[in-house]
Length: 295
Image (cartoon, rainbow, N blue to C red; front, top):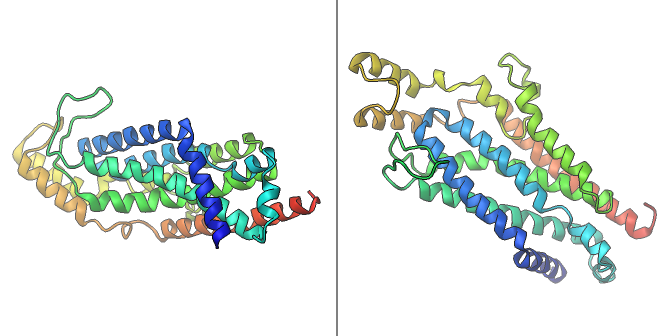
């Protein structure tokens, strides 16, 4: 157990002293601010925005991890760790855990930025990349639920794919990076058909297909807004009256997440977590073979 803690601490120290981690942290902060700004300007597209944010985060964060074992080998320190009583599975597990902690910490920075950005009652004419707030704060629950369902499983899978790819190819990041790019971008092209088989949903890492299949124009909040526009005769461009906006937000919050999504959403999240664990086991086997000189 002490060996695992030592390896994790060493990996975190290496990341802490690197310049890239701080650049990514700044990017995550800006991404969280931008996400909330988009949600507050159009809460009917909340899940669509969460999906887009998850896509960006998965692509960015997958490139800051995965080289833990290959880096040890290139610096010839892997023999030091594996020469101790620590087992191969514990060594790989410590490296994987360190990678998860790093990208999870960066993802939490994005979440905190989103929650803080949701606190102001309104903002207008701010930075060019921020939309004006058209609705009051939505509250933390919808951000937390969206973050857990759209981002967490994707991070676990991306960390395992990058780790096994870079480890098996002895430091080559290109193949693993291409796999992640295809895995993230393919749903935008392949799974946008609302009549597609639920099987396709299982391979949608960022929940893109669920946004296409369950559009915002079918939600109670959107239907209520349309009836109020007809009754009060206010412009469809711009925010509705404040009291109407408050009721719309109440309806948005009452829509259970992900109860109004198909079972394949839960199945896909479980599939990705299970696949991440399988890739971790496979990575352990690869390192064990490399350790014995058979690879």
